[in-house]
Image: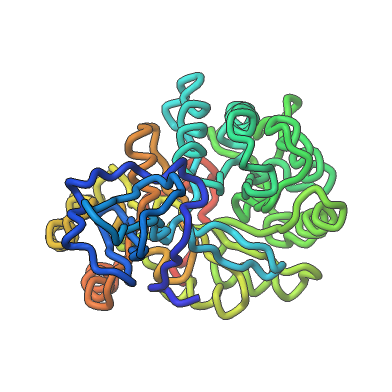
Length: 398
């Protein structure tokens, strides 16, 4: 799909078209037989009728005498609404999803955010066993489907992940079924191996922590993930998930996985933003029909340790935001989608959740500005080596 394409038509998730007064659309200025674009993504289609129209249509403008000018309102669907990527299974995944990680951990926060996202039009929700809030996401899904009968389960794309201590084949299946129960679903759309690290579990099905305060690593299963992947493949064959994939995997690990996979991974969810563009990894994934999915597409509130920079405070990016008169978050989300992959921004604020969904079409020059900021950058904000006691990025070759 062309990275700059848009799709015209009725907005698939919105309610009735917005009301527009005759004062906003002076009849004398309406050119018949064409569409007029308005702010907010609306288009007004104009037709001239030789006599007054008897149909009571919203937005009918009549002059003192015939002819009557009739206009219809359609919207230009933003890329987040109209853009989907095709997985190697043939399934369509919405280009912009909603991340449900809630590091604040307040009870009910995930529910509030998830249902706000669904109401705003998101149909792709990204979850994980590790987030400990799949039950709240599931409740949000049930409540939303009950309140909006036009949306069905099959319209949603639900992703979740198996955590490190559940990589043994029997534990992979248990984890998937546990997530399905918590989410209240019969199947997943995509199930991911969260990290390429296998760890021991304790008697409570939690990660086992060693005397050094770090995870107890299962070295054999980490270095040879074939048993884990065979269990993932079985989940897809059994219909518990429609697709399987990985997260935080490097090129080296992907090559090793592809060499043994009977069902290749459909996606690789990794940290991607202008401070960590990972062009080689993105290219490798796309060349091998593995869709990259960007988490942390807006970077992090944390500073770059060596320079004190923050992505959202980059002067070049702020200048671009001011030039386009668009929020920087929307620009970064659009940059990700136009690079050819999906992304899952997160927020706990309903207004920001809705705003993040309205991405835009960046020009070639705009893309060059952001690519210039990204050039040579390799700043990773999400690194769990101190928790795991194992460095996934043993080299920064991606």
